[in-house]
Structure formats: C-alpha cells, structure tokens
Amino acid sequence: MHDPLDAILGPRPPAPPPESLFTLTLQALRRARRRQRAAQLASLLACAAAGLFVLLALAPECPGPRSREAAPADKGPAPVAPTATALEWQALEGRGASAPAYREAGDRYLDEGDPASAVRCYGHALSQGGTGTEDLSGEDSYLLTAIKLARKKEKDKCDR
Picture 1 (cartoon, rainbow, N blue to C red):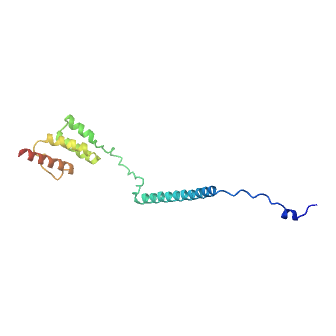
Picture 2 (cartoon, rainbow, N blue to C red):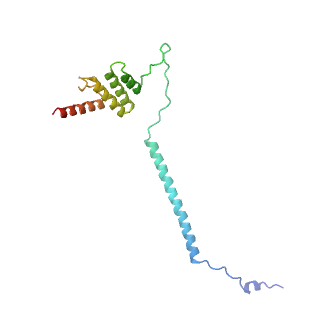
Picture 3 (tube, rainbow, N blue to C red):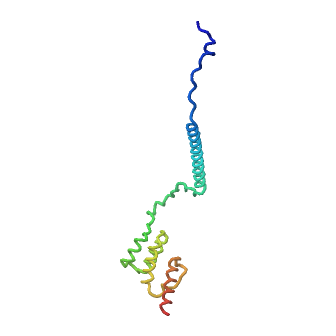
C-alpha cells in the first residue's frame, strides 16, 4: 500500500541549477536595448511625420485644372512666338537689323531664365549697334543696363 505522507516526507527532487549572474545581466541588457530601439524608432517616425506636415503646410497649393476657353472659330491658332535661340540665329544670319534682333533675343533669353545667353546677345547688340546704343533708356532690362554701365566705365578708364 501507498502512504500519502511518503510524498511529503520523502526525499525531494534536486532543484534546478541557479542561473549565473552573467546570464541574468545579459538578459536585462537585451531587454533594455530592445526598449531603447523601440523608443528611437518612435521618435524618428514622429520627426518624419512632423517634417511632412511642415512641408505640406509650406508648399504652395497646386493649381487646379486649366479651363480652356473656346477659341473663336473664325480665327486660326494663335501665332507662336519664336524662341530666343531662333531669334539669335536670325540675328546671326543677318536677317533684318542685327543689333535690334540681338537685343530682342537677349530679352527673350532673360525672360526664359538664361542670363548667360542674354549677356552674350546683349554684348553682340551693343557691339553692332554703333552710336546711341550706349545711352541708357527706360526700356532696357536690368542686365542690359548693367552691361551698358560697365562698358561706359571701361571706356572712361581707357580714355584717361
């Protein structure tokens, strides 16, 4: 027969070996690193979201679709203005008065946002224009005025 007190009073099974201090420390460090990485990721995402909101707030509004007005049926398509390059080639080939053509090409280059080409055309216009082109006028662009003033200053230096 089996006595129920034998289980209580009998020998106990051996206890599991205690974990070493190294293993416990390593586990604690790994948990701390995981928490730190999660916090860094959360702050990175928060910064990215804030940057996106600032960008959206500062970005100009996109224009809506353009409304196309019906062109009158009796008129043909609007004439296309020649490009700055085409105007410069016309001036180079000598069609018409080349100084005004070079000036018009320079103005067009300036409107298109190419100041280097505008300087080249303005220089040709002033070189071929003869007398009277060095005088300042209210129709001159800021770049043409600057070139005229620089040439005038250079001429005054040379005359001394």
